[in-house]
Amino acid sequence: MLQGLPVVSSAPTSHAAAPRPPRVNRRGAELGPRRGIPRTRHRHALGGNSLTEEESAAESVATMALPLQRTAWVVNKTGALSGLARVHDEIAAPAEGEVRVRVRAIGLNFADVFSVLGLYQATPPTPFVPGLECCGVVEAVGPPAKNLPEGTVVPQVSVGDCVMAVARFGAYATVVNVPVHQTHALPAGWSFEEGAGFLVQGLTAFYALSALGNVRRGHTVLVHSAAGGCGLFGLGICKAVGAHAIATVGSASKAAVIRQRFPEYMPAERIIVRDRKKFGAQVKEAAEMIAVTEGSAEGSVEGSESGGGCDIVMDAVMGDYFRGGWDNLARGGRYVVFGAADLTPAGDLGVLGWIALAWKYIRRPFVDPMNLPGDNKSVMGFNLIWMFDKTTVLGELLRDLTQLCLPAPKVGQCFTFEELPEALRTFQGGNTTGKCVIVVPE
Image (tube, rainbow, N blue to C red):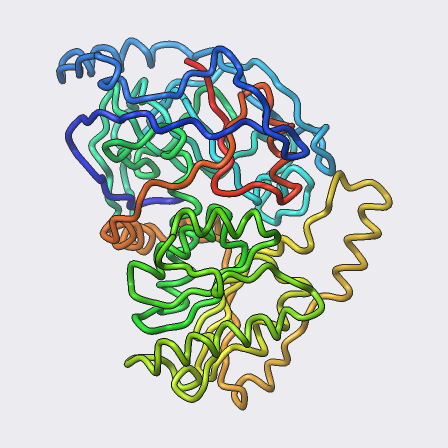
């Protein structure tokens, strides 16, 4: 499990509410405001007082005494979003090393779509509750865990604390139990919605660029789907370390989102609206322009020094766009893969959906390992969920990520808990920007 997460702040802090992003329907059209969905904030921002240690312990023990009723979204059959069903069930008291979190916001990830469709290798057997991350308030604390791996960082958590949390599935619920070492204090000034968009996508982008890509000052980095959650984190990391980013997006409207968030760092000529027929030429032009305008930066890999290439490609799209990035990867460069959005089905997997998916699959790109030594390039791939057992590594990654002092994640769209299937459908369509978040009422 995702372990070893250090605490950002050990003291209670207030969290101001950011302006609420627009609600959209499944076609991406903006909806009017819905009543009863207040922008969620930390308890102290609402005028509450922090609990004393005695009050916290007493409340925790009282809350743990009995199972608790909750509402959750369950997948009974994979293959279609219609397989999601809202159910009422009981959640047990927190076990050893766990905390109970009253969920206030849930972050959506592409792994959620793939798990509901049955295309995700890590998906548990049905029925299961999807969801990898959430943010909320600690309601109860279980007994201390024993025999955790050496080096695991276990934060001090008390009832009433606002925390971000990751789970190996199970986050699509109003109440969850998660290991305490998979929680992280909500930073001061962040809303619950922003907290629900940090851990999974932040760690994904940082692992891709830092641990695998070894990004350094002066590198040229191609960031796919740059207006999405992981992509915006990728651009922020590149800016923080002094790398030159080239962003790719699927539409001009998404390019505007990047310019708004990075007005000086990302000029228009470094943002590519992808064209399947000439994507390679688009990347080549952007990389060569960086080589000319920035010069050969000290520390760049061989290819960047010799005339304009990408030192790192951060790819969650693949499909028809792989070749354009691979052909422009400099010698010594690293191509990091963590998704395949171009292969994502447009809807549910009926007969026609499976046929379309099979056609894309047999046409997927290939790289001959025998050619890699001569090309002096690397292809790397990872899935963050398989890294959950690397407790100390992920703890160190999160420590280094937080030291970059990146701004809070951009929350693009908010949906209610009841609208969760519609939210997934909208997210699947690829027309969203930033983080898609489910707001859970108190």
